[in-house]
Image (cartoon, rainbow, N blue to C red; front, side, top):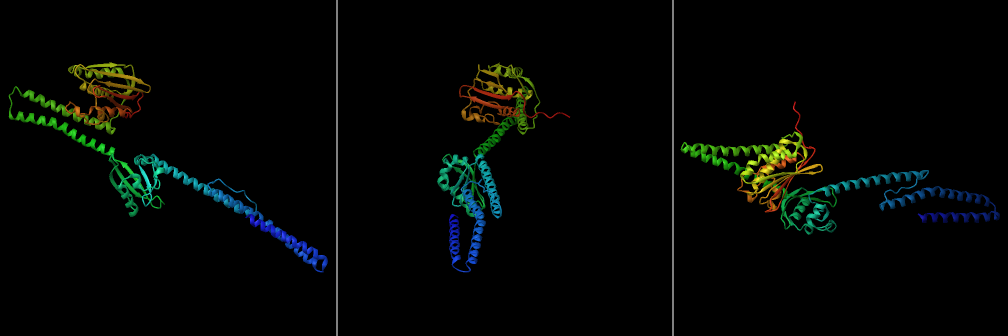
Length: 452
């Protein structure tokens, strides 16, 4: 652009020299005045033309410089408005620059949203090119592959994941253009994963999205289901078998004096079945949310004393002492449900206490919460079993032969949850166990619907 201006300046200087030369010839011959006038007119026209094009030339130069800055990332760059025809150029450029900035801002927002979704996902995700080169990893994927994204970008999936099944899955998805799924055991720990390779149409170098879902919890829940079916079958089969044997014995004939004993034993097994069925029905109602609580102010001390009284006969039979402490507290709760929580915990503690043992029941103020703890002097709970003690029918190996159907603690957990509280256990083998439930002082759970 500066070279164009220099050329124009040289042209004007040359034109001025010609005019001066012609002016010197005026006195040398006739007709020189007309020639000089013509030259002067041409010079004036040239100067006027130059100045007419100078403003558009400046506008073009400004636009070019602004475009270069925008290409370097200065999206807020604009040019001053020019009067006349040059103004159409500067105004059009500014409109275009605004739209470019808006487009880049929109793309940046979409990128941020997409990245937030990927980052928030607990499932490992990887974006890969058609040749399985890594283009993106979310934090869950970097943790699974144990490699930072900066180190993984550009490397083949086999180098990052070190798993040929994943590599083959991604290749098939890229070549066939349709989703591929497989269940694999990943890494030295053989973590069960569901791998889904999904083609990305018009995604540029993002050709395939790989999503990995950890199935460990799914398999654990499936094991819980199998344990439940096995345990409930066992709990039903035992009393039914006993009843059948007793009835067959009666049918074969017994001494009249012995018949009442057989009837008593049959009734005892029927009662056992009734308790089991009722607890199953109660647990099902609680878990499904069908139970509706009626909260009211409850004096914690009175309720714990009542629960201890209900278990007193059983405790005395086992030479166990129940000690109730620190109960000057009030909580808004469903009284019947809270009494059942306390009696189930006490029943569990008495059952596990050795002869001459003690069971402590305490209540503590924890600000917005009330914590009720039942602690025994029993054998304790193995660490590996503690996460499962609140499951239906769960029994540790040490308690297989112990009485009970294994539903009491499950009912405790779900009743406490219905009050928006928590139930936890702390134990060391040989040092007893402490079960603690924490309830909000003010009821925030689901209330019973009003009658009518």
